[in-house]
Length: 468
Ligand code: FAD
Ligand code: NAI
Image 1 (cartoon, rainbow, N blue to C red):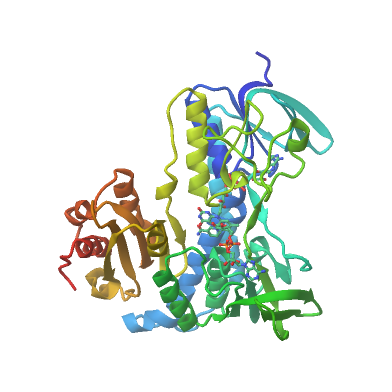
Image 2: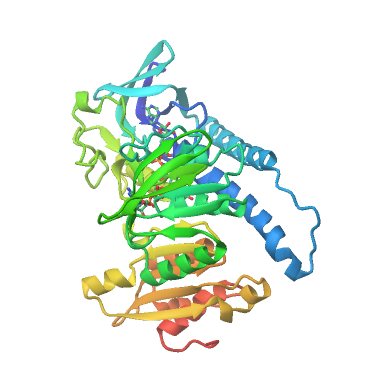
């Protein structure tokens, strides 16, 4: 076998692609991964999940020191923001973690090609770096090229004054004013970062509410909390233009269903209206890989595209655009390729918004259950009645568990509160095992812990909460 003949060639080294590569190697496939960035890890590690969480953590510390420490008897004098250091720490975290993946590739004997991958025929991938092109032969090809920020017509991103999430993760100074177009996950996470660091942030959302599709009660509480924190909202409003000028961007806004135009100025505008599949210069049209109307690669139940031997997973096939969803698909796809039975439970993929408080959504919302005509019980428990949350002075929010009225099977869990993203995991596990609210309620939870709020919500679902 020549060096460039592989069982699997993966295009894209994000969480979907790199995890698929490791699983493929574990399964005994001779594996290559082609990534055009010099660092592995994709959007998630380089310009997504990780740098945003690093800045969320740092800015949370700053806000705590500025507003909360004094009530704990910790007095800070001369508090000062050093944005350069904050950004350098974030870059260091990214650097370390991407190097970690390169190490895992070596450990698993995965060939890593740096360059742009193009499928020139079924079973053939050309890798181009600068003026050099190398040809790889592959029994199977996996497309894991991810996504990029969606544009708004007529609004030109310069990544300085008008930025996507990538620019918003690397601003050189704190803007005095920031307008965020799109009240989704990126808008509220990065809007929170810059608000905490001193920016006056206004979120403009096209729909009546932020976080479309999320449990209504959670959205209500989240909006109230963000407003209390100082974020301003213009809901049911659209931005019709944004022009960068000297020192400021001028935006024109109007009601979503039309009306009088209004102008606004902002130092920085963040465009965060969703993400689109990334399939540029992949050669998909030439080999006949089918796309849907929105440009996502279409796949069957085995993640195979319309061309035998070419598979796709992750953001590029649509669905929840989440790193862990991409990872699960990468693993399942490789296991099926190895003849194993594998499956992704799309009904139990948690989604987390890492603001403060955090928000976690899992399974069905009340709105969905009502629309589907499913009878359900609701168990709700507020963090204000949880001793650990009170001891931590971090007691905003609640846990809500939805369970089938007839069988008690857990159908959904929605949490807004401290550490929601970690707390939701036990419900994800319960749902994987088709567990009932009573199973969670009868599980011993350590005291004092915020996880006791999950147990109490489960108890509430079966009508016997202790602490409310
Ligand atoms: P990607 O991570 O996009 O990776 C695709 C890779 O393919 C890229 O590195 C790209 O350079 C490469 N590529 C593309 N075309 C080619 C080619 N022709 N040749 C070679 N290489 C190519 N998700 C979460 O679950 N949790 C979070 O907290 C979270 N935070 C986020 C914050 C931000 C600001 C953003 C933008 C996203 C966030 N996401 C989060 C979403 C998450 O980043 C994506 O869902 C995830 O990265 C998708 O993984 P993927 O492997 O499908 O694609
Ligand atoms: P999003 O889909 O979460 O939110 C986009 C928002 O923009 C929606 O509320 C939508 O109604 C609104 N919108 C669309 N067009 C608009 C317009 N013209 N004017 C005003 N508002 C408009 O998309 P976002 O925030 O860009 O994030 C992209 C993806 O990245 C998401 O799918 C998310 O899953 C992922 N992500 C995940 C994170 C996490 O898991 N913590 C963090 C950040 C991103």
